[in-house]
Figure 1 (cartoon, rainbow over the protein chains, first blue to last red):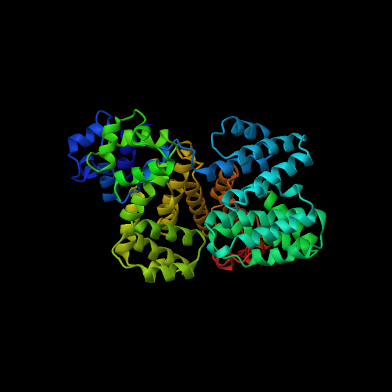
Figure 2 (cartoon, chains in turn orange, brown):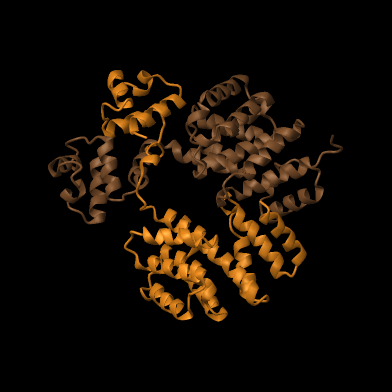
Length: 249
Length: 269
């Protein structure tokens, strides 16, 4: 879709005439030519027109953005594919991967091997070393940790969680960091329950999660926390009920 | 903030020369003038340059939106608090609003009135104004359904059903990968289900159930799907499931949301 066409769609959705849409910023005949694609409008005039009508540039141009520099979307794609055990999707991402970051590419390779059943502890140790040797504790490190947590021994995993909590002050974290930390915490609970049902750190983490704010973005995390709370409190029937509900959504 | 300034900022971030940045899409000398705000660039070429260098259009234009659309943040908050049925935050937000002549303030009042069960007390002309504006927007080119979701109390059931049926029949034209669209649509469906339950429209509720089952499994709408399940359990008189779901929502700390959900009625036909 070209910008002119999109302009027309937006204008129609607001039931405006071309004259009204142009809002005196450009004349009607020019606006008409922009819509049918025979003239180009300057970025400045486009902004003036959109803002006059209370429309955001980011929203207007959403479909024209071919950049994949929105690393979060990329990371989320990888996480979703991993959780769904979608080897083909991961391989596809690996083939088209064009970022500079070596860590993510290595992780991709490792995850594919893991899903194929060919990943080794040696590979994991090397990966772990590469992730942390730069001592760069940023969003990407948090994101990387989530995917390899299962490979750690319990004691190392506990140390890792402690490090995460120490290095990331919840109050000063970005929204993204908070989300990643929560996902790590929840995954810790899942791994923990499989291996060591009486882990005291788990109870601490559950209490932490329970004290998260009651905002829309926290809803599912808090619901999942209730599930783990029941599990670690040995209320297995209640936990099972919750699992049934969530699995059938 | 000008286009030229923003271009320069990103160019320096990427460590590119002006000629590199221009990338043959415009001449280097023209690009130079644009950066210095001496020439204006057409949007097509600007987008092409940004895409070529993998610069997110969102990142580039966000600053301009923030500067020129001060209400954008307010809108986001209103929709988010509405999504979470957070009456407390909505009331606090209403007190903060300085410009009371805006549409968003009117929407805010409507949401609060709805949650407090007193929409009928709203002045008739306000109700009419909102109805007109929300129904006027062409459902064709919806980028989200917040307006309709918020204004459902203003429609009679037939009108509401008509809107929903239209959406179901034309679902292919909606971008169902867009979280905002999905979340607002789910809110609309939940409000619709609420009306269905209160006015005893079983068949229509089943239609919604079918539609929701086929929706994508985005993390952002799992909670909403849970609420839909709740309503369907109500319709099916499945008191065990009803209690389990509402218990779960309450225990996870969202009592204020649970309060907005209807309980099981007495005898149902």
